[in-house]
Each structure stands twice: as structure tokens, then as C-alpha cells.
Length: 331
Image 1 (tube, rainbow, N blue to C red):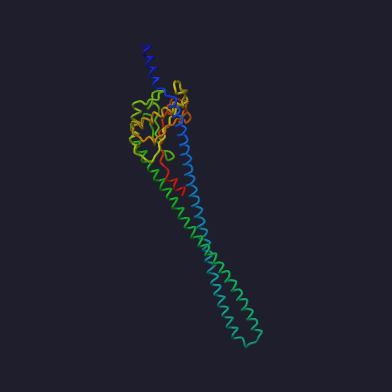
Image 2 (image 1 turned 90 degrees about the horizontal axis):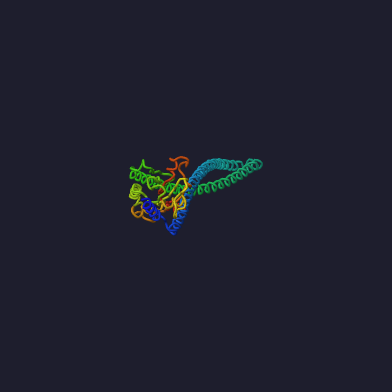
């Protein structure tokens, strides 16, 4: 009886071994996935920085716009004041001409005084007219600059508004998808499955106890149902990419064959999940990527059994397509 059981266990073990080529392919897929994940993180940071920079530029332009309005108002006041002064000088000049005309017969000395006053007044008038022309040129330049600035301000505001609208639209779509996923997987809520929205992405986390027997890469019946329910909800979503990440605790892997350690185990489990979602769940294979993170991204301390159970998990990460945002930023 013991010999039969041993032979059965040996057959099961040999059946689970993975060829070296498939293992190497999985390693390459894992590295590709990590690179894509890093690119998405960098892209998200770049988008946030671009949005913050646009808002800072918008605030700076608004301040410049206010200062130019203040300068233009001051110039208008100076212009009106000089115009009034010029009119006063014109009146005085006319009065002096009249007095000069009437005093021609009263003696040359008086005429000389009046001529000097008239000349001084005319020189002052010419200087003020030059200053008025200078102020007019400055005011026209300020008004042109103000018009250009207002146009630039409108363009920036429109661009910021467009970015904010797209981000809001993406956030709303992600929230709606998260709600549909949560509703579809409600029956697994108390069985180690959680659905969260973080950093514009949806994280569906399934503890290993829901999916796999201990140390195995074969998904059990209940785990398969959860994955097929998830696939049903997201199958027709065309504007997302999906990363399936395997995670383990820190306990050393004691199996054999092609799986050497926890990192290998996490990759194989992620691949097993992807195959169920694509083969049986009819998901588009180009939308999914399998990756393993081993024990290196824990969500709980590995010092307790409960913490280790949380760390042994599969995370299905749904990321919205941000191509339209990048097109706007690069314009």
C-alpha cells in the first residue's frame, strides 16, 4: 500500500514539473512585466508632475495678468492727468498769445518778458507731449502684452481643463469597474479576496489559500470560480492592461523539480492564473501579463501565521490606458 502511494505521489510530482524552456520564458516574462510596471509608475509620476507644472504656470500667468492690469490702470491715470495738464498749458499759451498781441504797443520790455514766458511754456508743453507719446507707446505695448498673455492664459486653462476632465473620466470609469468587480466577487469577500482602488488602479487580491493547495501551482475549484467570475466582468474592457502578480511569504520553498525557490513559485502561480483567465475565462491574451514578486513585496509582517497568509497571494492589477493623456502632454 505504501509503495502504491509513493508511486502516485511521484507521478503527481513529475507531472507538475515545468520544462526548462518554459521556466526561462516565465523568467523573461517576469522581467518584462517588472519593466512595464516601472514604466507605468514613471509615466504616472510624469503625468502628475506635468499636471502640477501646468497648474503652477497657470497661477504664474494669472499673477502676471493681474500685474499688467494694474500697470495699465496706472498708465491710464498718468495719461489722463497729462492730457489735463496739456489742456491747461494750451489755455495758458493761448492766453499769453492774446496778452502779447494786446501788449505790442505797451513797450518792448514787457514784450520780452511775455515772449520768454511764452517760450518757456511752449518748451514745457513740448516736453510733456514727448512724455505723453512715450506713455502712449508704453501703454500700447502693455496692452499688446496683456492681450497675448490673456490668450496664452486661455490656452493653458483649456489644456489644464482637458487634462482634468480626462483624469476625472478615467477615475470615474475605474471606480465604476471596481464597483462591478466587488459586486461580482461578493461571495468571496470572507474567503481571502479583496478589491481596492489605489493610485488610479484596481487591485484584486486573492490569498493563496483561496486558489492553491500548499506549495502547489494548480488552482483549485473554488479559486477557479473566483477567477472566472472576475474574467466575466472585465473580459470586454478594452481600455485597460492587466498585470497578474504572484507573491509568497518568507518561508523557504521545500519542493523540487523546476521550482527552486519562492520567486519561482510566485511566477508559476501567476502564470497558472493567467492561463485560466485566458483559456477558460476567454480573456484577450494580449491584455494580460504574468509576473512573480516572490517574498519581496509583503503586505503584512511575516512574523505571524496571519501575516504570512496575507503575503501568500495573487494580485490582479488593472491599469487604465493613459495614451490620450500622454498625447495632450506631448502636444
